[in-house]
Length: 116
Image (cartoon, rainbow, N blue to C red):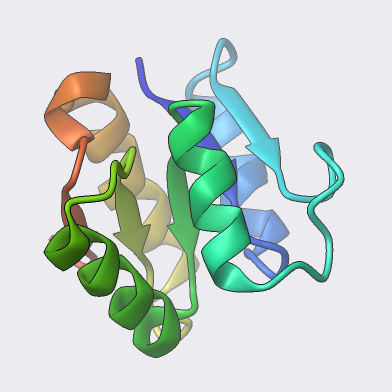
């Protein structure tokens, strides 16, 4: 199962739904690890260092930073971009599939866009 990190403003209802589906989910938020209000590149660096796939609603900005990392050959644990406009139930369903179907190594250097 994937080790996950949620961005600062990630929808708590989605997190609750994921936790109900997968009670053993290994999910932290940036608040849990003291990264609140840090710039996106620092969050991505922390996620890579701790091998955690980042879940974020920040589709535009975060995808640009991730692409820069990949071009520079920097390590990245993976990212799942979840548009805020995506229905909560659909986001939970799609994220559950990603969590169940991908390995930690399979998500490395990967950008996954929802909906699937």
